Image 1: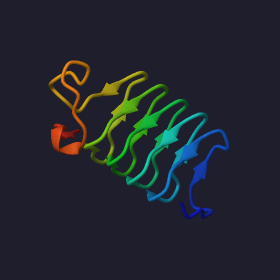
Image 2: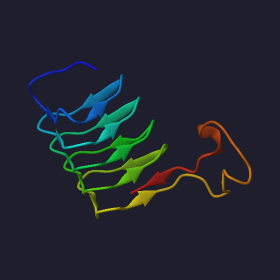
Image 3: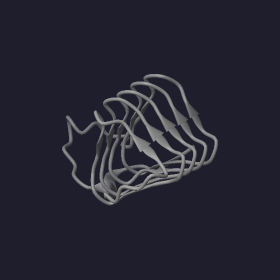
Amino acid sequence: MKINNKYFVHESSCVDSDVSIGDNTKIWHYSHIQTDEIIGENCSIAQNVNIANNVKIGNYVKIQNNVSIYGVVELEDYVFCDPSMVFTNIKVPRSEFPQKGSKHYTKTLV
């Protein structure tokens, strides 16, 4: 990840490789931003948020504490996520029918 002075990532958070973070975005305590993310400008990602691979987040998005966003989810501009929301990406339970890869995921657009 390329660090610049235009966004903030709290020292307790983990940002994986190949993540694009827009200007004035803030990522707070204990959050994990996984590979291949695009996060827009002026976003706020609160405490203990997990954003899985291949998620796109627009500008001015506010994600509250304890939110989990899994692959193939796109949040457009000005979306607000309440605390403890979970976005799922598959209709058939993986525990019964193990599946691997995003080809099995259903895209979610908010």
